[in-house]
Each structure stands twice: as structure tokens, then as C-alpha cells.
Image 1: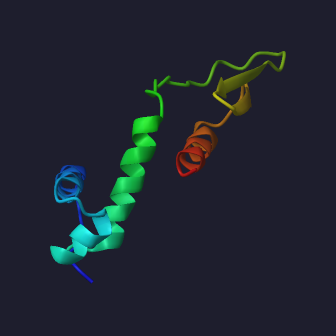
Image 2: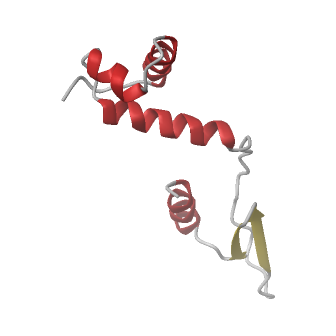
Length: 102
């Protein structure tokens, strides 16, 4: 097993070098003492991130409690989250972490 790739910049340099050498990332990694699985995971993540649309962060803050229970539907692409006025911030953060891992 070779040395692991630790940064995105390093992964990009290695992937460019493999392409310039006419080799697959795995072939290039073996020839240069790099852990091929590490390089491959960066390749997969870089390809995945280049296909996704730009993210826009929106801060959610709890609203003051009201007598009527209001519901909100937040939809991003094909993912929807429904919240009420009394949502717990920690619960929303857990949902976002779960969605990011998908």
C-alpha cells in the first residue's frame, strides 16, 4: 500500500499527471508509490462535486411560538424536509448531515 493522498490539490495534480502519462489513476498511483484507493476516492468525489449545482446556504432560525401550528416544506431538488414552527435546530442539523452523506 502506498502513501495516501491527503488534499484535494494533491489529488488534482496526481490525476492530471496520470492523464498526461496516458495511464489510469490506479496504474499511475502504483508506479509512483501512491495508495490507489485514496486517489480513486478523491477522483470519485471530485467528479461528483463537479456534477452538482452550486449550493446556497440558508440560515434557519426558530420563529417565536404561535398558537396555530404552521408547517413549512423545504425542497431542494428531489429532497424535501417538512418543519413546524417549533423545530429543533439540532434535529435540522442532523438531517442536513445525513443528507450530505448521501
